[in-house]
Length: 491
Ligand SMILES: [Zn+2]
Image 1: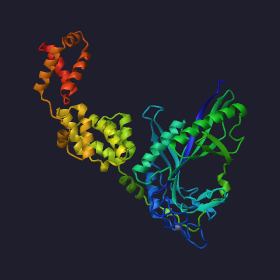
Image 2: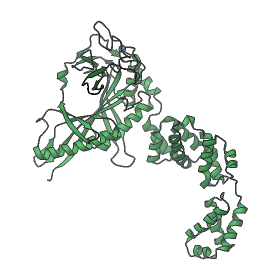
Image 3: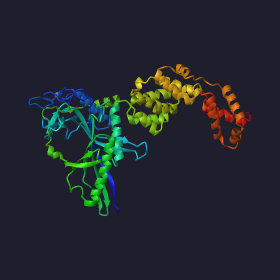
Image 4: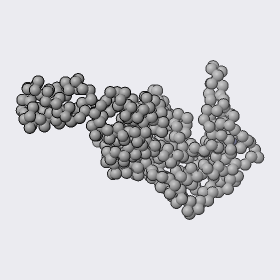
């Protein structure tokens, strides 16, 4: 087979906006309430009720659109999308069809591990719509019943649709990770996938080079993926499945209707569900109950200025101004703004961004995880960590014991001086170190011969002996003094 294929992936992401109330009524959007306790005549679709747009939801949607560099039209409207769903009692969903509130933006992605070339993924559109409720099947064991919870009905969702610019499951996963980072940085959503605040549908097909020219396989939409890893796995599976199907059937785009397949995370397979509806099936028409929304020319600009530093700019600054590796910058940024601010404080206070990055990405993050706490609650403030780093540099704290000091500060909430005292750490002055070196070199003449023959690693044995005699010895300083003494012939 000389045929080669390209994987074509586009994503549709539904993000629940972090508003207290629903999109067209004041009911709470809180997760986990008793079923059907967060409803009213508007969101359960009783006749005669009138929806009123939640301005806060629209503002969060605008914020997202601006952060994605979308065009914001001056005028946008609401449309009814008709379908029968048991968990949407109005029998239509209020959405946006031909005039979405934003379109034509982009999101740049790159992989710190170099799995693909950095690329710009175009955003086709982002529009607002209301969520449906939730059907619960067979909750009362064996009864075969179906129950409906309408708490979620009417919750504001922003649907973000990418162009089919993604070329691998890894690119798709990276896009989602970067999008989630952006959304959480600007505070428009908690993006909690377990609670359904972020849901992803993936469209995928293959473009195959054949001796007769390029051929596209039918587009498959995959649903039911509960994590970014699941999205990646589902796309990997579906790519292979479509390639196998092509080899067996040579079925092309146009030969089959667009199909929806559900991802089974346990079995690791996608399964056919239904033919995909075309937009004409939904009989969209403008919602007569809702006024169109206008956005003033200055509004987008005002929002742009209020966004703060976005992750992409922050990543560049950490790399350019603090010399961080792409990997370290990524680790910090993924922890959120407060951790980045902590790092910046430590780096600026010590003038040593390498040491600051090492401490924050290792001991600090591990401690936060172990204690299940936040950086604001960490007993070691950025100023206190800066003091510790300076003490290591000045030799007051031997570097191998710095971690113990950090731990003591975390556990006992004491300052550096008290931690040093409780651990019995005392600075070893230069003369003590020289004396110890001389003593050990005199007792180990072979070490001197070895070092003179170029085997400087022979010093290692002496360092071990020195630490036994005084645990406060700084191995780096000790090693340096030994080498200098041997070189000067003063041992
Ligand atoms: Zn309501």
